[in-house]
Length: 281
View 1 (cartoon, rainbow, N blue to C red):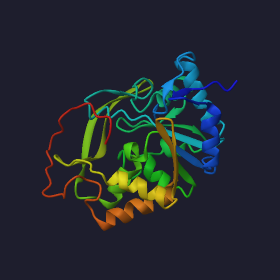
View 2 (cartoon, rainbow, N blue to C red):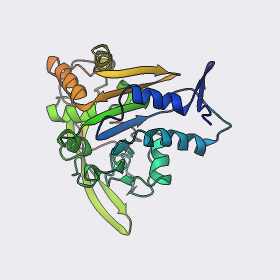
View 3 (cartoon, rainbow, N blue to C red):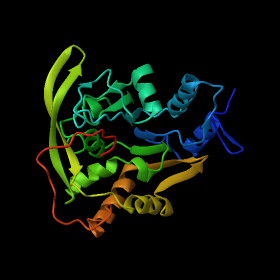
View 4 (tube, one colour):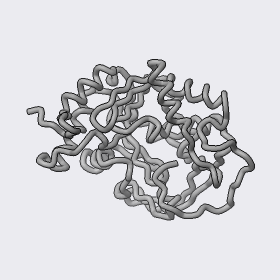
């Protein structure tokens, strides 16, 4: 029975509705699908219960039959002066992401800043990472150099809200308003407990993200490089890695300040990091 998952106004949004849109957007035509999720579609069906709702969403993803699916489970643990436990440290990247990590036992990368979980074939994309969480030898770097057909799916949120791959591209171009900062802390990986250091490409003090990411998303949609449709209170958007990368870099080439609020001036780069609860880069 195709019971609705979300209600938005008078519209009921069912698993078949989501799956039909995903297939129409050819989301399944790739080797690797990187998925950002959110619950923006509408009011959840309270009669289903949390587990049934999340299982239904998981089933939608599985029915795509994509060989490899990756989802973010970032924790920024070292930034928050917290221990990172590969098995136990919870992520705030979405209820579905955390559900699949803990209940479906997707494989998780051992990155105390920006871990990912994976279901399917290409385990090397999370097993062979280095210690630069968004730069060289990160999962994003491995995806970019893999030669595989890679797509990004935004299931609920908009591209400009959470497209972390953009920060990898900022690292590739070495934008003037970000710099590498090394974080240290404790990692627990099964029976092993050890100290380690990981690098993150963080913003200079005072630099604020501007409206460039929204313009970028609109350009992708207007040029037909991204397939997007409003669904209830959220959206479903699919784009391929090459189009996402080329468009982003073109805009950055046009102006190195395109994605920030004001023209970047003198770097402000403290030698220490003020511990805070980070949820985004």
